[in-house]
Length: 122
Image 1 (spheres, rainbow, N blue to C red):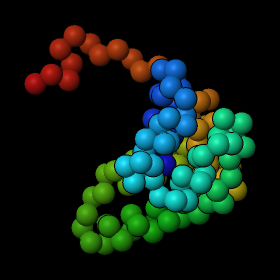
Image 2: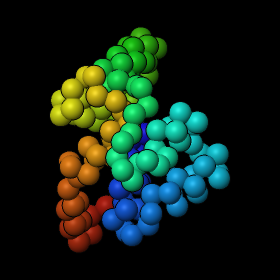
Image 3: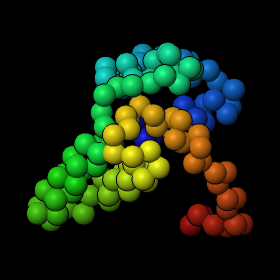
Image 4: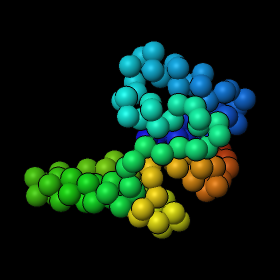
């Protein structure tokens, strides 16, 4: 959901209608029905509500990370996702619905810093 929110934000800033990206992802079978329902129009009106509270998502991630730790697995992606959801929860509160992610990303996204010459090249 975080990656999809970022992709929708990027598509919008590139002049691509959100429905084009949603239709494309759906055609690939890349969207779970609940996620697709959460982001389908009326997403343009930003009246999203899917029923998954941010507090519950963080509780689920905490449980998953505890299991991963007990199994000796680092789970860096899950850790980063938990940090992002926690940031959203700090801004919107634990009762906020995860479908508000696009609105949240729009208000918190900053233009990335340009890479220094040669940075990221090996």
